Length: 143
Ligand SMILES: CC(C)(COP(=O)(O)OP(=O)(O)OC[C@H]1O[C@@H](n2cnc3c(N)ncnc32)[C@H](O)[C@@H]1OP(=O)(O)O)[C@@H](O)C(=O)NCCC(=O)NCCS
Image (cartoon, rainbow, N blue to C red; front, side, top):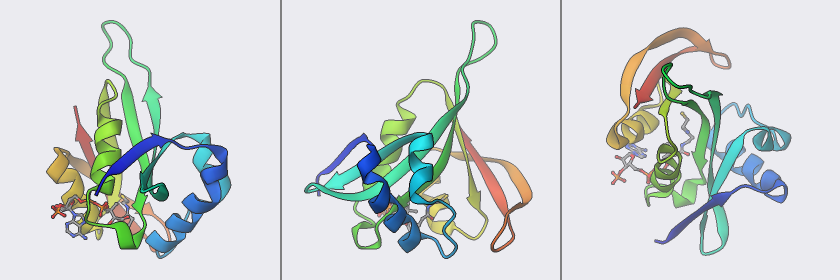
């Protein structure tokens, strides 16, 4: 299946919110939140099927390290899962210069498997990081 990745545009927002609500038991992101960050979307045959939202948290400077980016949200519409959509989105994000990190729920084994497969390693745990339901986060990183 051919997956195309492109930057999100404001008119994508309703579909992004729909994928968010299909993907999380307690969705946190509403349509207006996605464009506040760097948002890329994946399409299959012209249909929007997934997104990745990230931000640069540190710009880097000579002698003081590389840029740092945080992956804030990733989701794929249920009927398009396990065909490489999230992998395509993550590969595009990881091609950006710098180091990358993310938080993932301890119970979200599917996402952890995906991240490990791409080379992320566990850095530590943030206790009670999430609400609704309350849960710890595993912090994962990749240089
Ligand atoms: C996690 C998620 C983004 C994965 O998207 P995807 O497009 O299906 O992922 P890919 O097809 O690129 O999967 C690549 C690899 O990740 C692993 N993986 C993905 N989903 C998995 C699952 N449900 N169980 C176990 N491993 C899984 C597999 O190793 C897979 O390779 P394989 O299919 O050859 O076995 C998707 O399941 C999703 O949207 N989940 C709900 C939202 C979510 O949890 N987001 C992450 C928040 S941190």
